[in-house]
Image (tube, rainbow, N blue to C red):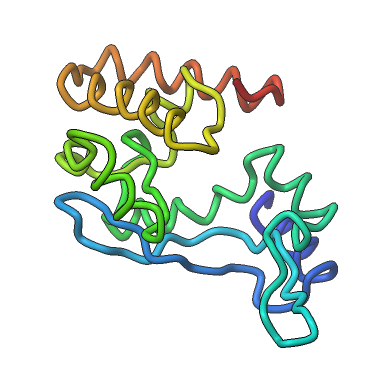
Length: 169
């Protein structure tokens, strides 16, 4: 029901399609199509180029992202086997090449399938620069090297607290 409600809201405010896909590297670097709810308009400048993300994010999109509801369609990726519920978050391909070049051991996160949530997500705020990516990588590599059922349960618990409280890290 939540999925259908969000889809209806996105469709009335942003039109069709309500979902979009992006290429993301997964386990062993294999690229897959990550599925998310659309949160940005298709506004373009006079030359036909898309406006920057910050200018295209809509009020509905902000709300959908703040509640993490834009992540719901990734359950399709989980069912298809592209992702797990828990693991390092798959990064956009356009950033991966830079990260692999500038951050030692970045490719270590591809030893496991990416996840909808992960150790880095529940321990570090949303990152927006290279240093944040380095910090999050430390959490991702900790997860890869120290996986246990107890760590998985702790991540589930911490994710649930974050989603229920509506307060990201």
